[in-house]
Structures are given as C-alpha cells and as structure tokens.
View (tube, rainbow, N blue to C red):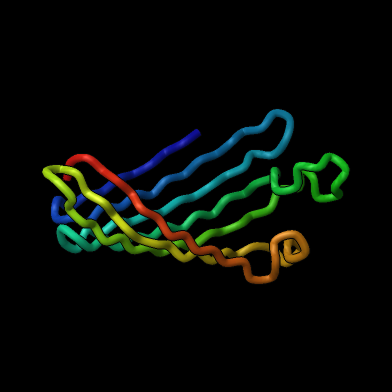
Length: 129
C-alpha cells in the first residue's frame, strides 16, 4: 500500500510526502515514511533534502544470524547541493554532492557502527531544462 502527496509552486520549489506499508504474509506489516524537497534557487544552484523512516526486517540476510527477520526502525537524513552548467543547447551537466546521517537502534551498532554517515559526489548529464 502506498500513498503520496506532491507539491510544486512553479518557482523552483517542490516537495513530496509519502507513506508505504508492506503487508508480509506471514510476518509483520512494515511501514515507511518519506519526505523530500527540492529548491532550484536559480538556473545554476539547487538544494535538496530527504528524510526516510523505514521499518525493515531484511538488515541481516544470513538465516543463521539471530537478528535475521527481526524488524528494526531506521531513519536516514540527507542534504545535498547541485550546480548546473549549461553545455550546449539543452544539454546540462550538474555537479554536486550529498551528506547523510542515520538514526537507528543501538542493537545495530555492531553491524552498522555507532554513528553511521555517508557522503556522495555525483555528476549528472541531462537533456532539457
């Protein structure tokens, strides 16, 4: 089951809220929430962010692991920036990056670390504006 609400103001700001429920048979219903926003400040600069909160029982795929199929609620918070460069006609190159932080139960520290963070650098080639 999924549901989402989207918003765009026509001036470069867009946002989305979403909900999902995976009804496992047998097993628990696993829910997830998502919120994200994108702000095209001008033709070159974009800021974006995302927050996810997921209940997942697939964090330990080994059947022999005592935490196999145990559901945990995990959250991810991500912020990013992109700079768009026009190349030719309607071809653009965007260069950017993101930083992510996670919130999780302490029992996951041994497998995922106490304060996991992530970073991404990217280049995106796009056609059109």
